[in-house]
Amino acid sequence: MVNSDIYNLFKELINLPVENECVEFKEAKNDFSFEELGKYFSALSNEANLKNKRYAWKGHYYERDGESLGALNIQELEFIRNQNRVTDWSSLICEDATINDLDKNAILKAREQYKIKNPKLEQECDSWNDEVFLNKAKLTVNGKMTKTAILLLGKEESEHYLSPAVAKISWILKDERNIEKDYEHFGPHFIISVDRVFEKIRNLKYRYLKENTLFPTEITQYEPFVIREVLHNCIAHQDYNLGGKINVVEKPDELIFSNLGSFIPKTIENVIEKDSPEEFYRNQFLANTM
Image (cartoon, rainbow, N blue to C red; front, top):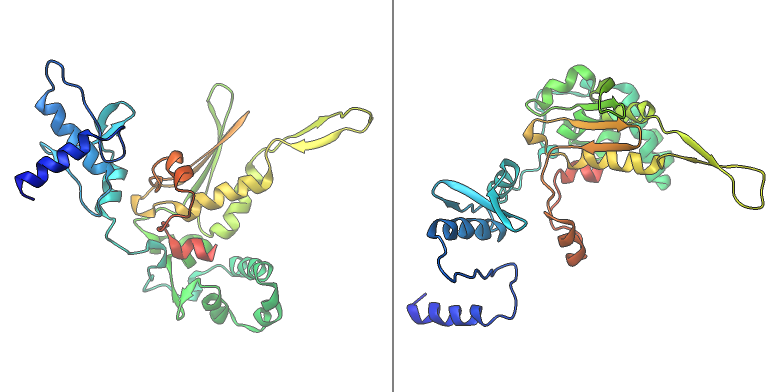
């Protein structure tokens, strides 16, 4: 770009009516630190989300945090760094694993869920042996065990095939003073562990009287479908490369679900404005199987 092009672009930018995702105006009546300017260039460049390109100022990476500047967190940094990598962790093959590393009850549970999801294949599904079923259900690839198969159906002692990833869901009970009262950890097979976590949650029943009736209406504190849906999302979209576990913290008046991995759209506002599905999903193989 020659000087005249730069000048014309500059004129075009300063004539914009408002700031946007690519342009930010800074007023410098007296002085604007060159140091701060460098940090802003780093932050704006990183927000531009150019594939696999991170921009630092004096060895440090920055992002905007509201009206302030802050250090780009590790998860965001890794997300930018890995954008050009199309490897799906959940589809990777566990080379030494075999069908003997899967739990029989978990396979039966998977068959039940598969027939519910595909009622037209119910009779055909009953005629498949386990190897054929696992291929049909896209849990294995040509008979080879994937990370997804071990995560959802694996025996507890098969967890080492996922290392250094951690396959754990922790349920933690806290009282109104945030003091831990009880806890339990659940590993593979997640297809059954989800039910065990759900059973630990104290979903209290409330009763209230409507007008013009003597019979109380009963409702649960939490909608069971919502609990399961959130937990399934935690499993499907966890960034297993970060080596963390899924936490379900139960308090008297709330449930807190957490997993590791950045929110791909970055903000809720971006989701609302875009109003369309994401082009990229973490663990696409796992998400499709679930």
